[in-house]
Amino acid sequence: MVGERLSRRVLAFTPVNDRLATIHIGAIFFNITLIRANVPVEEKDDMTKDAFFERMDNMITATATMSKLCLVILTHI
Image (cartoon, rainbow, N blue to C red):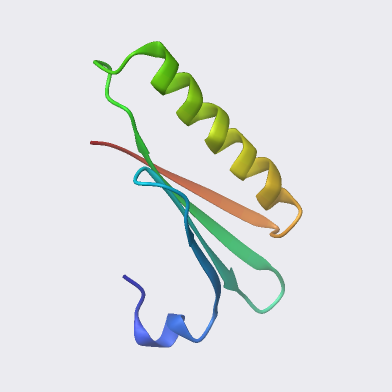
């Protein structure tokens, strides 16, 4: 959820899947990208975890061309 003041600065919101989403925010001197990542729990198989981290790595790489600042927020679900 984005507050009313910040919502005017949102350039894009991209829900990638049920575990990954990005929001691009236009700041004064540069753009900021937040990546929300719900990391697979330890009980998940290695293939699932590897696919998740590969996708997240691709997102970070793509974000480097769009923003000066990229924050990754990791949580476990």
